[in-house]
Amino acid sequence: MRTIAVANQKGGVGKTTTAVNLATALAATGARVLLVDFDPQGNASTSFGLARSARSPSSYDLLTDPAQAARAARPTMVPDLALIPATQELAGAEVELVGEANATGRLRAALETLEGQDWCFIDCPPSLGLLTLNGLVAADRVLIPLQTEFYALEGLSQLLKTVEEVKARSNPRLDLAGVVLTMHDKRNNLSDQVANDVRSALGHRVFGTIIPRNVRLSEAPSHGMPALLYDLKCPGSEAYMALAREFAAAA
Image 1 (tube, rainbow, N blue to C red):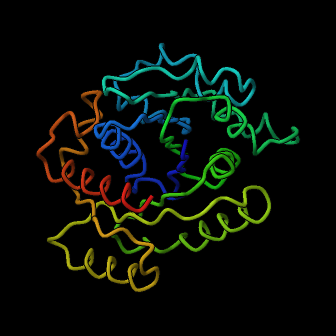
Image 2: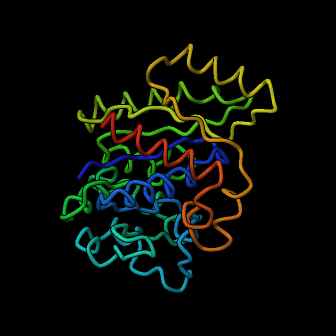
């Protein structure tokens, strides 16, 4: 199982949308995919129409009992795509785990008990706290969604530094899968300027596919389904299908 942490400490950059729809697109190719909702907001779980009352056991339980992973993973409406949901309990996990042994390796221990998956995507919270560190320690690679807006590059260097520190101290196999540009508005010259600046700074580590700002991507979670099921032909869905092909080819 190849494990990808989808991370960015800045909120509202399309992180969960990317995790949900990239996982869906890869599952549509016949790959067996697991999506771990590791954000206390639980937006990835909502994207699959999972009621909050039906989210136990959850990713929180994996932190206290790794053996819960197999029970927590449940099928979704997408064939070959399983989900481990999140609950609000995750919000207190960072305080509860402080000082505990192997506090940053709990998720990794849980995922190592699973078999039969080709891909695992971890939707990390918008922070660089203990939950995101668990995601990075558990992952083989990290995928960074980056919106094409003015402040896009602020904080990116900090995230890349954190990835290097985790690689040096806790997870030597961790590498950068790449940066995916999101929420691009082709009517706005600033979006193109930011995209060019990011490519100049990071070169080949930026995926060629750009995810546009698209109302159908925003509407889909309210209908309890990924955008690829809500409207396969919308520009956002087509972009995520293209990203999945590019992602798989680079794997």
